Image (cartoon, rainbow, N blue to C red):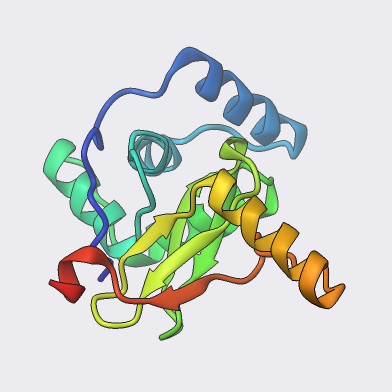
Length: 156
């Protein structure tokens, strides 16, 4: 399971997000089921990245009467990925974490010890890109490849 913070999870979908999700589903002849909606609430309500286990944990906590299991979560995630509504980021150990695709491409840092996935500041990523081009003539694409190391908590 990921160690990312799930602050804000369980909030209702913002009208704009809900509209985009419904439009994408309707475009494929599908509807926004309760299960799909609560998975979206968990992902879009998360301030960072969230794994499937935390999605299920959030859904269970905020919708105790709803019948939901890990398979349902993975089916919803697969569909959301196909529709381009969610981005998936694989951690070094094969685990995946998810975030809304509208956050756009950006670089990530992954802690080798705890697996925490952090967004890299765009200014830092730009500086790395610029320096690699200047010193080596190499244009790097950090958006697709995470930087591994130790997070502040694990270093301490």
